[in-house]
Image 1 (cartoon, rainbow, N blue to C red):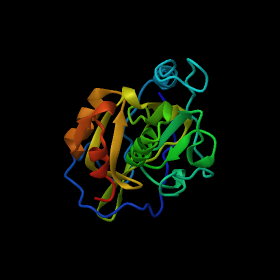
Image 2: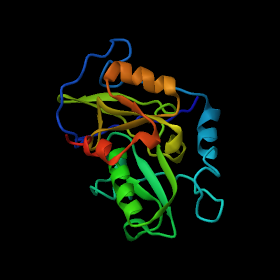
Image 3: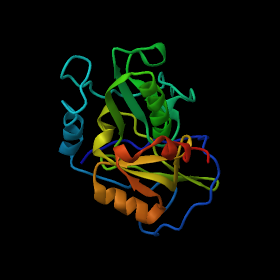
Image 4: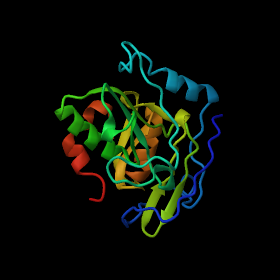
Length: 218
């Protein structure tokens, strides 16, 4: 199995929101181990992006990197590993996101899409777009006031090509910046999560500017 340590999150900046009614078996909010997969899936997920998006050199796809406490979100400036929820990395060809080397780094997926839409308007070419794969990590849910938060996983092997996931959008479960897009490489996992916590299932291509505008602190 892929063994990823659970991350504790103190004082996450997520707005209060009433939690929904999950099953007692799957959601004992506080410290519940959630999802497990075979170790080989983690490596395969990272490797499968090769050739899918185009990368640093012609035909090259850059690999995801581990995010540390040196990494801040490009949009909100928060230190990424210190807060709950999905993380995202975007690599651009022949561009420096926010004036530094690739990738652009985010503590929420909806902020990453917002940033990317703006870069597309400038004519930037995306080389790779990675999101946390909640099918390949042992994630936990925790309670902060009225908000149910999902753990963050910033190690390189926790990321997967965003075009290969099913997102659960606008569920009752939140990340660092409120309601988000929570990605699963296994459609069945997304179905199960949505059944329990609400939200809409979307593919990468389904995510629009309007989708992003309806997330976050709303």
